[in-house]
Length: 436
Image (cartoon, rainbow, N blue to C red):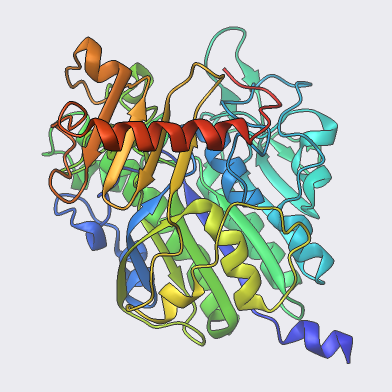
């Protein structure tokens, strides 16, 4: 009976793109690039329009998603080292993989990890039965070397062991490994965390997509080609799910880990936040408001759009509720989005959302309703900030979604309220683990 009950549970695939801009998909309004498979996922699911990453940078964003806890509470306030042997997210953190594994699911990590490069903090020690991909922040998609500062180092692993597959396109290897895992576990429920290495730099799109976008301005052309190449691999994975007859009983979550990059290695840009200010590393909307979709044809509306706020910490409690399994660790910060997903009239579950990056003096933000207060402000999209703006920036997202106007001097009462809310929240957290 227990085996039959397990078989009836829905499968879960969590697709995470890397450095994808806020509006960079056709279903989010982009008209100069093509993402037919992401758009098809939205057509078969629920698309969120005010959805937030847990952080504006890679490691803490991922920690929030897979633990359901704010990154500071998950022990990952900043980026984890990409050096072999260095620990990352504390091993005692309970992950989405451990939660679903206890409920009888087969679990796999495919792609980028960036949450620890030591034996006790790599994927298999965090609940993933199968793992394939790179442990650090990014790799060249053909050589599988991590290029940052010398010496360059190879970073491709399978089930804890370094493997060599030079010359093979990493997104294709991801689809192959994920498809094999799904095929071999098609008769039991499975969870796949499919964390792509793109459109994070290096921009390495397919030649045919580079041809399609040859008339776009640089560096948008390079970014668009890589994003469309990534979209094609998402399509290839979901096509295999369809071929196996698993789509109706498979929940698919799609999200970017944060906003687009303006780093030198990313050709100083290419992605777009549309009307929003900020990019990767910034707590302006362009750094943390991300495309997010969930699709489950058998259990959720299709072609629906939800303006309520959501947060990547919410996926864990949402998926647990949809799958009908218990939370292993109920001490989380995410809240279930199931009522919102099933009804456009449901209230936003959060009264407030919090962010804090790095140590105590790092950038932070709190949003309550339409108000958002940012402290120790950064604008990675190149906007000018006065000394006062850099200290505290109060946005009203209903009146000025572009966050060009600082309302702090006009509403000192709101500033005091939100600053106190942040201080009380931060005092309740324990900052542990690597961060910078």
